[in-house]
Each structure stands twice: as structure tokens, then as C-alpha cells.
Image 1 (tube, rainbow, N blue to C red):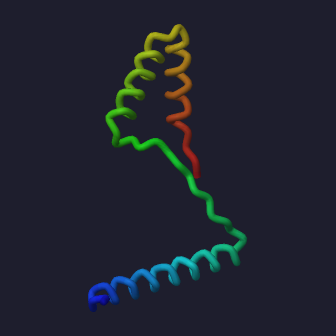
Image 2: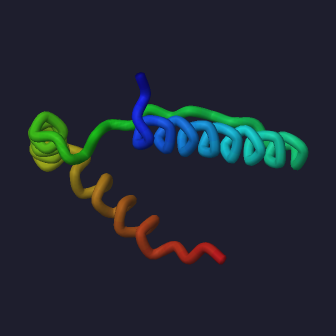
Length: 80
């Protein structure tokens, strides 16, 4: 037997699905399509360790000065 709270929850889920469906339809009508991206989770200790290892490798590289000059140059670009 479902409770009043479960009925409200089911109704909220139904409304959310309908709202998402309507949004997807509007976006498709504008010529858009959905894309799902998976990106690294920068909050994990594993990510921090990997970033640290890569930064140390770059710092030890013979091309470090050129690499840093490139980063400095593109960091100053202004996009309007």
C-alpha cells in the first residue's frame, strides 16, 4: 500500500520527466541535439596525484621553458 508521501514523490518524478521531455523537444526544434560528456573528477585524490606527477614531468622536461612561454602567451589572449 502506497503512502501519501510516496504518491507525492511519484507525482514529482512524473512532472520532472515531463518537464525534461518538453525541454528536449524544444531544443531539438531549435536544431540542437544532446551530448553526454564524461570528464575527470577533479575532486579525487587520484586526479590530484596524476596532475602532480604530470606537472613534475613537465618541469623536468628540456622543453619546459618553451612550454611555459606558450602557456603565458595563450593566457594573455583576449576573446570577445
